[in-house]
Image (cartoon, rainbow, N blue to C red; front, top):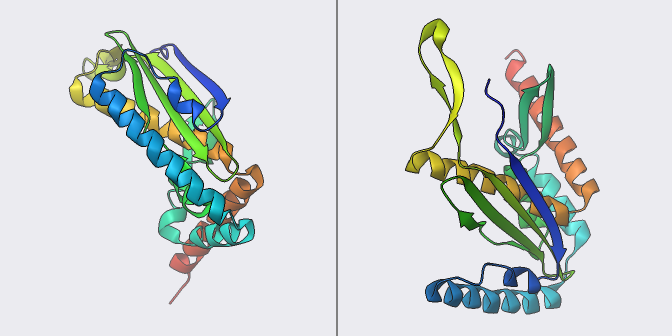
Length: 214
């Protein structure tokens, strides 16, 4: 398999409203208007979140109830082989589900900071409007995708320049990883671990029901 091209992930912690001010200054007028609108929306959501607060016990209970749904639990963990072992962890599906119940969280759609013929640079920001904190992460990676070249015994995997659809899929996939990571940074680790355990139990129970004789 071809070597993985270089990739760099950067993480920063900022205040919620300052986090949106770090985009490149050369934004178009339309982009600046859009960013200003998002700022106003975020400030309005902050006021509402501060008034409502967060019932942590209720948020935890409803999150665990969600993890009892087999359809959700089935997509809650990612898995892939590496070095003879299986790597697993919470997926973007689980992160998004937990964010729904951990009220007061808001994630902005990941943005492209830089796009050249060689490099893609994206950024994601998530806000905890109850605690007035945020997490931002950036991912800078090569504009390449893996493709099999040749046929039969001569086939090999190489990194090649993507077409428009492949590029869109590449960016969306890396953006989803960033979204997951910034959300999980704002949700307490013990809540995430409890959700993982509940999803695993749900899948075991579901498998037992399927395999049991009628």
